[in-house]
Image 1 (cartoon, rainbow, N blue to C red):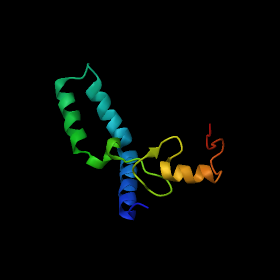
Image 2: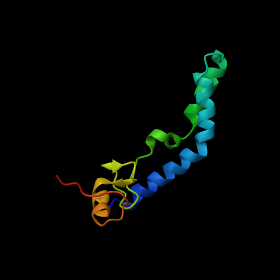
Image 3: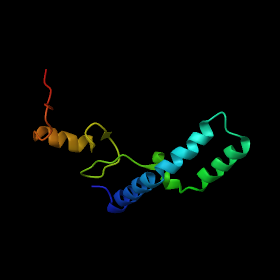
Length: 101
């Protein structure tokens, strides 16, 4: 089980990303548009830099939904490999069976 503070910090980051998503997308569109004037470009760049660092989606860490483990995350199921194995062996994940050959 991961530290509760780490899990909560990541949850706060997710909320910030949601809050600033539209604003970031708008500023990024201005920056990527080749028709933008230099003045508008630098203004958008300055405004983007003033946003909180944790508002960037890159800073959000994928974590297991059950244990909060940050490593070995299986995105399709939203859990870590250890939790996935436990759930699969218990038959709680439909369509997943232990292979044998």
